[in-house]
Length: 304
Image (cartoon, rainbow, N blue to C red; front, side, top):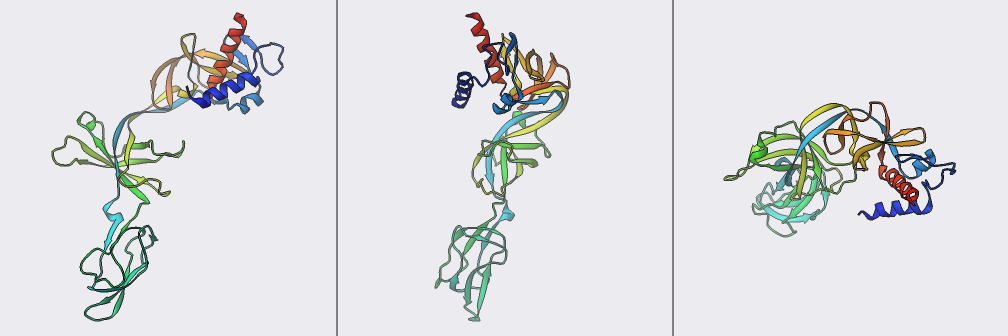
């Protein structure tokens, strides 16, 4: 069991932030087995949030895995325009440069005049093969890569290939982002995989302004392959089980009541409601487990 869950529950039950032991308590009392009262102040303090039942767009999705890469146009390998001697170098590996920044000064072997080697793109110096006094030859002096956006290359195996097409939305999984700030994008290309492989490659451009993602990182992504609108849905975080029945807690003023519901289709966030509750009803969307624990605690006390 999650330690945060245990700590939160023990704190509430021990300190009596939500107390159902005595009906005389002016803030909170048990009316019957599956109904309880909690003041607005206590609900707010304990993060008991609510929403309204109603129509919702749900998404059918599959999971695919792959890796992040840089786009060819976002990488530049810089050579000297004329062969010569490197007189000075202005950057090193890891430096950020903008288009037009000075990278090095070279003295041409033919004219003996000095000229500037400048950055052709904005990005990060990822390779440097240039030092003062060295000959330029025809080698790459600097490599620059722009990591402000990357490409997700997802492997799509035969059983999934008929379901994937350009324009579908993807969301990266397990990428270290905080909730509500997950990287999302659209599939732009579906390409054949490398020779002698059964999978295709779905490519999507991933924003990376914060530079938290790096090329080569193995990733998973949820790909939305269909969407449908339900007449009535509730958040998955609202669902609880009491007496072997799945349901939600509705709210009317300070009263919270457990309502069994029949669930249909669902996605990662919402579940379709077939029966049990009407549209336009206020219900608990977050921390509903606290209300369940409160009612079960009171039932146990009454048994004794």
